[in-house]
Amino acid sequence: TIIATEGERSDYCSVIAMGFVTASVELRPVKLLMVCDTFGEIPALFDKPNEATMTALTDVELIEFPAESLRWVLRDTPALSVLRNLTKIQEEQSWQAMMANDCLSQWSSLKLRQMQASMHIDDFEKDR
Image (cartoon, rainbow, N blue to C red; front, top):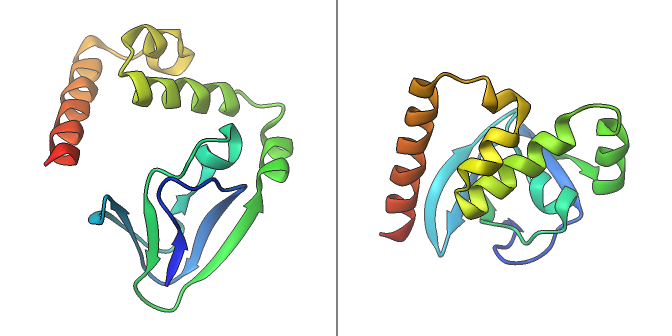
């Protein structure tokens, strides 16, 4: 059963309460999600299309948070700006955006190089 479709908009974030879900990009499975994993927070919060198709592999129970409720819960925290910066980094692979993020700007150069290396690996695997 398809839960969310790549490229479509979503106005809620989901937490898996039971079961297994696979995330697929261009029909290729890229990640297995299970209990306590979340998906849909970036599309819901920032009106972006879903980056992957989410498909139930077993019977699945989801806890869904509407975007407005999620924004309300996060309103007095730095979480929204952190997520916005991480989304920008992902979209642009922008190191300037990374350094603008208070959390990430405190990382050591080794940690930043490790993250940069993983971003290139992710891109390589995505383009296969």
